[in-house]
Amino acid sequence: MTPSSSRRRTGRNHSAGFTLIEVLLAVALTSLVLLAVYGVFASVDGTRRRLSDDSEAYHRARVIFDRIGREVRGAYLVPGNVETFLEGRGGDIREPSLTLTTTATTPQGNGGGLSQVRYEWLEDPENSRETLVLMRRERGVQQPEERDEEGYRLAIGIEEAYLRFHDGTEWKDNWDSRSQGPPQRVEIAMRIRSGEIAVPFRSSFELPVIQGRR
Image 1: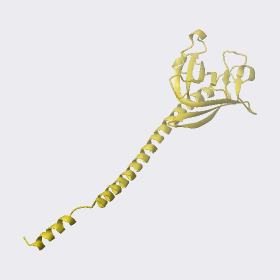
Image 2: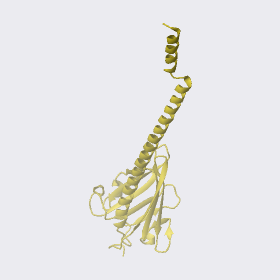
Image 3: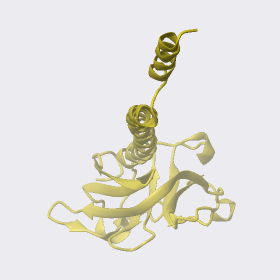
């Protein structure tokens, strides 16, 4: 082997490898690309989870407002009859409530065509976030009060709830149709937890002029 051929082989072996700087640059560029890809996937996943949480909150709000709205629109209030009434406690209190007699009955009312329904927004002992749970209770007007049906949990994760009643001129926080007559509208506002945020919802329901309100 001649000295010149040995030098040529040594040069070829040296040029075929990578320097430490080249390796570090390649690792850094690969890391940046992977971080960018991870950021895109994390953003997409976060958006998906927020949409899922929002969808759940909107579903809960729709169930609540559809149920209460149907019963308020079916309210049956006979002047002078203490068994038919609408009574509500709202305003800034932590645990509002709404009780009314309605023709929009369910099998829980045990028939008769007329039920007394009560809604209560109560502190939820099963939730560590100190949110409210919406309890619903229904019994037939003809049932004795001692046989009042046990309430059930209609919705959870409610940050706060606000009720008020319109008399045709102004809104009032509390109402009792036995002394004030029927209100014209009932408004319910709630903030329902959706993931780490609370989504506000508000709706109002007009009481129809039906037999019994006149």
